[in-house]
Amino acid sequence: MKGSLIIVGFFAMGVLAGLFHIVPSETANSGISFYALCALMFCVGLSVGNNPQTIKNFRSLNPRLAFLPVMTILGTVCASALVSVLLSNRSAADCMAVGAGFGYYSLSSIFITEYKGAELGTVALLSNIIREMITLLCAPLLVRWFGNLAPISAGGATTMDTTLPIIVRYAGQEFAVVSIFHGFVIDFSVPFLVTFFCSF
Image (cartoon, rainbow, N blue to C red):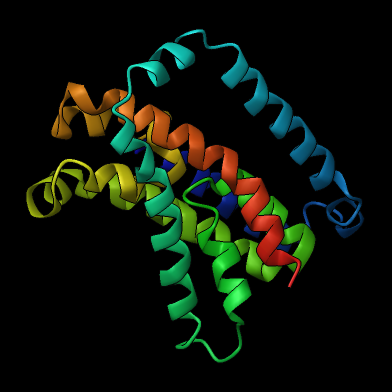
């Protein structure tokens, strides 16, 4: 929760810096976000490759639960496409690109800004932060109403890091491996799916 509030705080500072022209507009349009994205992708790869526990966790996973990230992806993308029916100014591809961030706000919002502009990138940032915050705040209710896998699916890409402690606390320690596997697969899918939907 604290991490999400910090991100929202930096986003608000960026908005204020833009409104009051604290940062020159030439800096914002200089392509620096592309280099930030490259650095972020490198750090993601480093963190995944540097964790020897990842392979061990995958080997102990129940084969049936391997389908959970697939169902999360399908459910999110289909729901995002349905939302486009309510938004006359946005195409189904735009909405699916936002949904395909799966809570990975730092990566997906930069991709979407690069491909579709700052407006949709901002929507993606807020949408994905809200997804993470809902998981953090509503995990006990999700477990009670929909079962132990619900907060994992709701957490999307965040289930291997920021939402993992709250998932383990309310769903149980035995779901830690499922949560890490789910987050890893969703994390890996984000750059491919977001760029795919942005290409339309």
